[in-house]
Image (cartoon, rainbow, N blue to C red; front, side, top):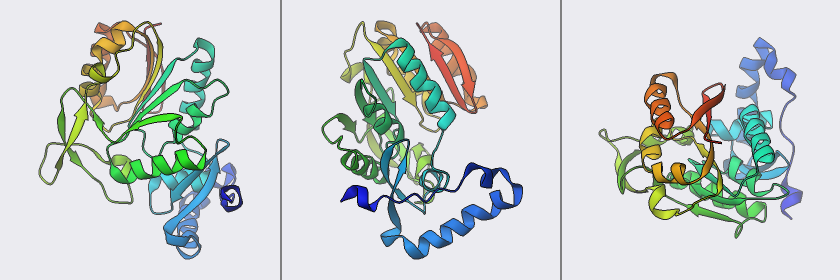
Amino acid sequence: AIEAQVRPVALPDFVFRLPVLRRLAPSLLRRVAARTWAGRFKVVRAGGAAFLVSYVNYVDRQIAFRGDYERRQRDHLFAEMSARGCDVFIDVGANIGLYTVLAARRPDPPRVIAFEPDPRNYDQLRANLLLNGLTFAVETHALAVSDRASVGFRMESERSTGQSRVDDGPGTVAIPAVRLDEILPLEGRILFIKIDIEGHELSALAGMRGLLGRNRCFLQIECFADKLPPVAAFLAEAGCSPCGTIESDRFFSNF
């Protein structure tokens, strides 16, 4: 029944390479979706998996209308996973579960653990695990990852839930957070860690210092240029060296 609902809606890549169509196609597809998608959601296919997406949300639209999201980054991460082996994949800022689902669907899947504090994203993450038969295959936590037990959190509008973030400014709410060192007493394992948490990277890393020191780790971290120096310095001190950059995603390893 689930398979019967999946419809290919993505346009060919060349459409988005033409300047005029690149501007017009997303707006046109949004208007069509607003009239045809029941309750603004649709089940679509990306990377061989099924995903519940919303035409309202930016990341979801990339998956629905372009058929993918962060393909180059994922290809690189999973190629390294195949080459080095992986015992545990930790998805920090899992959003609706694109990386989580595809990691759990690998031929020889690692243990997969996902963290996502925005309740709207978390609900979609759980739905996408259900759609792909992975309800009991992935450990999920509706928590922020930090170096302390509570953080301020700003929930962005439904148009951009991927930008919800830790923020101590006015208009934020306090939510529970966790230090990975406290809940993942792993040692001597091969870990792949993806971090996409909109500027809170350094605090999250500070809460997993022991984890990085006790294991062989490969990290993909979305980190913009203004935040990079302290992140790179911290990782260098922890024994992790830079090993590549794709757009705003930085790769580090202590292999």
